[in-house]
Length: 274
Length: 244
Image (cartoon, each protein chain N blue to C red):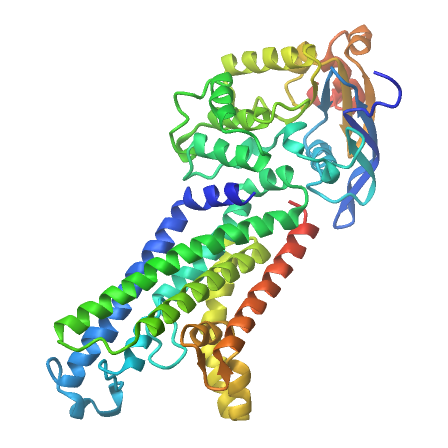
């Protein structure tokens, strides 16, 4: 079943487009973070740091923390939970994998070959998870190369340790795989491609809004809770923990969230008519 | 075969309603081994729903459908026991015919070596590397039939398999099904092409408004005063007046 689902994934144009968009989106985000922002700060381009004031994020690419932030396979979050093109493309890759069988009728063949439908969901999750790992590795390499190029151009030393770089990249790969599987589960739950895309986009857009509102209304306690929403969790995983959520807790929470939505998708597919 | 050998297909009291309206109501029939059974009925009579029920694609409200003595969901390696053609195969437009069969083979647990054999069998070897989005309905149907044959099943369940096939394709399909049954295989085929069914079927089940109104042999149909399957069909479905 896993082999069939991997074949299904790699022979679909949507998968290739989503992966390409993720890479291009990351390249754009990285160029802004590691080239444009430092140039604005130094005054090489634009009116200079003083004129820009608080509008300009303070980034010291010479610091190990900034360099590790730049290694995120989803693009630097600039310390927050911002949503980049790479992140959107990764979750949509999963959504499209979860809905294309319903859209084109392939789900009938899958269910006929595997009447125990939870196996289909597990097979799809394994295939999309593996695809997420591969895409995550590509994104991690792209992040590293863009950072290295920027550091070389500005003659800034690479300050982050090799162990930290490897750990950040590995956690990034895990986050990408989890987000892709999360998208898959949402796609299976929604069935319709349009509904799946809209629901996933809604979740991504609503999360920072909900987090900001919760922080304003209920204060720091609410902020802790909203750090367990998907995008915040993914960023926490990549950066080894943020705020009150430690790295290990973030990994466990993201895996648990992904597993819970996947289990809901398996139950839904097992009970529905196809 | 002794009395304890399960029938290839056995449907008992099958019922299904959608939004409170019965689509399949107390449907009972069986399909005997080595025979071709035609499942006939007007549009909306419940033929496709019956097929989907017996394949476990749709959950039944009442009754049982057994494939070789067990519900479809309990079959081990089902694709190697039963080949199915529904809705022209559910082909993804960006995949080629060969890729579609590779996925079907992997799902069925069948060796990839079978792909070339079934492509040749359905006459699609030359077009196998074209994207399905560029296929005609007949070509999609041939790939769907190829997928059904991948696991070398003992039973074929075909819903309107001749849709879109050209005359040569329809002739091939008739020959294929007759040969399959002659070799001991069993076929349940739903079709509106009564002349085709008359030519190949051994048994006939007719459904109207979700209920079985006739279950008989082709010999008995042809012995009817009307003398043809079409005459018999119009009579038992009560649609005779609609064509006058």
